[in-house]
Length: 110
Image (cartoon, rainbow, N blue to C red):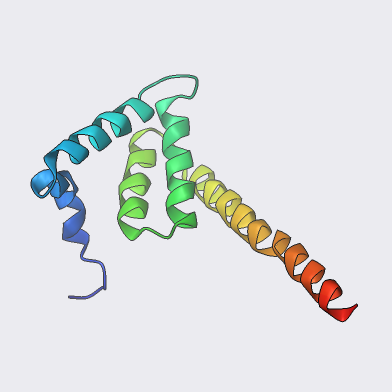
């Protein structure tokens, strides 16, 4: 195997119901409803999914939503901007927890 994650496994995602069909059916029903057109377009949702895929570091999701955003007409620039938004939020979330550390250090230093 060339990578830790086998890219061929992405095609097996639909098989997750093999060991627990009831929950898989509920998940796929929910998943389908979430990605249906609504207040956000399918294109917008795909860009969000691409950004979140990077934030949670899921290589399968990155592959899937890289393809999906392209299919929905997103440009490379839009896709990379979405990734940068995810990076900024993830970085900010790490940094804001620095306040917790600072509070604790100040408490312990008293």
